Each structure stands twice: as structure tokens, then as C-alpha cells.
Image (cartoon, rainbow, N blue to C red):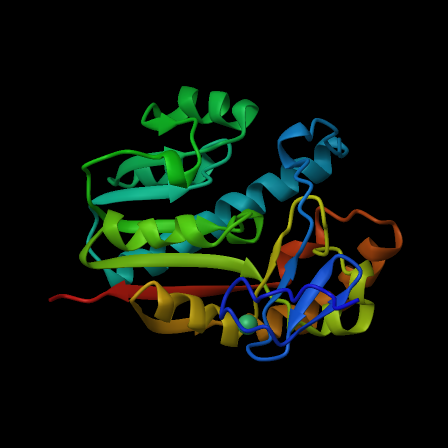
Length: 258
Ligand SMILES: [Zn+2]
């Protein structure tokens, strides 16, 4: 019996290999989940950390957001910003305080309700169902691109961006040493909610397909290095939600001015 070929979700090549439910493309090195069973929207079990630890994490999150905004503000002037997958709206709240006109979309109901209280301009939709005539100066996707069941809706980003507009993406890095060492035990490997496993090369290919010009990538190499001892401690105690924070990259892209 001839097995059905599985085509790469990113480059369309039929040269793929299957490891359980994980598909690796031999042509472009993209990885993806084949039989998607999305339980992301059912997540209700949250990790409750001791107050002192959650305060530290919250403060570090706010500091990270401020650093991200400072970087964005160095690249473009303040205007309309859309955060795709804005979660509880913390990023947009801080952006608003700094003078940005903020918009968000969040498909997860519980997070959407929180974000709505904080910033108002939020819709409870997925990117493919988001209808607007607004064009944005900046669009951000922080740790959400791995959740897309299909890459097709991402083509909408180009239409939503103004000419010369900026796209900022952060994403877990499937070429990280952690992934290579731990394979499917990697804390970011979650078949029920992470369906796309990008590395630097495949991200660039995605942006090329989206007709966006890549400006620069932030690797966080030093941060990775420093984080390893912590990573292994967290790995051991399986606080899987925390470890991925260090295993990602940030990408900055511009839309062409025609
Ligand atoms: Zn491919």
C-alpha cells in the first residue's frame, strides 16, 4: 500500500518525514503537527504560583513589554498598533499609556474579557474572521504564530499593514539547543496547542511568502546561555509554562512602500 504523501504546510514540498504526529520537511526544515487536536481554548487549568513569584514574573513581564515598545518606537513613530492574540491586554495597556492608538484581537474568551476591560478596542475573533478597514502602523504577534492551525490567515497581515508599516513577531525557536537535546520533551513541544515549529530560516521563508521585508532578528543568544541552568531546574520540576520564555526569537519586518 502506498502511503499518502504529506505536503509541507510552508513550502508545499512532498519531501517530508513523519515522527508520530510531528512532520519535518526535508526541503525547508519546517516542522508541524499533522492531526491537529486543538485543546488550547479549553485550557482552564492555570498554574498558581506563590504570590511573591507571580509578582516577580509580572514585574519582569512589564519590563519586557516596555523594552519591546522602546525597540518598536526606535523603528517607527507612534500610531495605530494591532496586537494579534493580545491575551489579557497587558502589552496594549502599556502601549496606550505611552500614546499608541491600541487595537487587539483575542480568540480565547476568558482572556478577551480581561483585555476588553483594560483597553476597550478588542475583538473576540481569530485573525481570519477579523474585519476592519483600519490600516496599522505596527502589528505585533507575540508567541501566537505557533498556535495557527493553518498559515493561510497570516496572508491577511500584509493587507492590514500600512505601507512602510512594521510587523514584530516573537516565536519559539525550533532550532534551539533545548529542542535538539530534548526532542518531544522540549517544553515548547505541545501537540495540542503548538502546531508550527519555526526556525530562523523557515520564518524568513514565511515572511517572504507574506511579501514583507525582513529587517533584523533578535537572537537572545546570551539570554539563552544564562538561562540554561534555570531551564533545567524548571524542566525538572516541569513548570513547562515558564521555560519557553527563553527559547524564542524576535523578528522585525517592514512592508514595502510601493
Ligand atoms: Zn517545507
